Image (cartoon, rainbow, N blue to C red; front, top):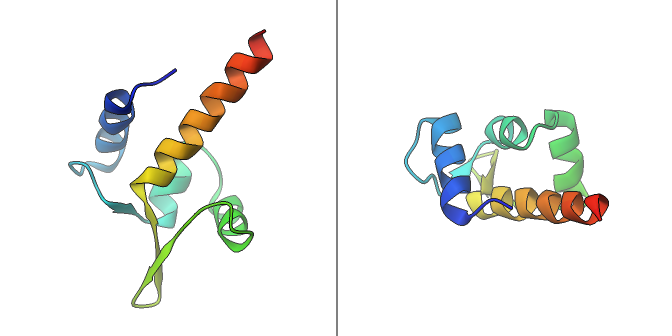
Length: 80
């Protein structure tokens, strides 16, 4: 399972920003390896939290942590 520090290193390497508080939908989709359409669908169904600012959606970095950690748990359970 990834540590918080490993996730931050990954997010920073992918975005080129030091510990970003929020991500664009495109950045989030690329980080968690899903399409933008899937990301918007998860937003619409309430499975991903967002903040709106000037007609744009931003996703808190904490959501990347939550999704990646949930995937790690799922993978560990599948291996058992």
